[in-house]
Every structure is written in structure tokens, then in C-alpha cells.
Amino acid sequence: MELDQEQPEGLPPITTEGANVDQFPPDIKVGDVVVCHHRRWDDNGLDGIDPQDETGPCRRP
Image (cartoon, rainbow, N blue to C red; front, side):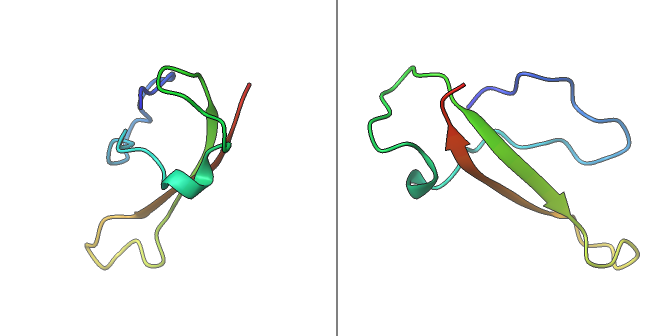
């Protein structure tokens, strides 16, 4: 996946690993453009553990 935005300042970078295959439309092909929801959260910002990331669902723009 390619990231089509600037990386947010002061946070660990957003990864471009992608989403699970079940998060994409069923007829998606390599090279198709999709828009995916990306959620980042941290249950406890003081514990020294990096925030958790979740990508999906994805849809065609």
C-alpha cells in the first residue's frame, strides 16, 4: 500500500503493510485504488508500548 498523505508529527509513522484480505472489495485487482479506514489507538500513553494500528474496511473511491 502507498500512503497518500503526510505522516503525522509527534506520532510513530503510519505503516503501509496493508489490510487483511477480507477488508477489500471482493473483485479488487492488483493496481486498483482503494480508500481504507485507518485507526490508531493507545490504551495507556504512559506505558511505553507503541500504539495499536488497525486498517480496514477498504472501498473503492
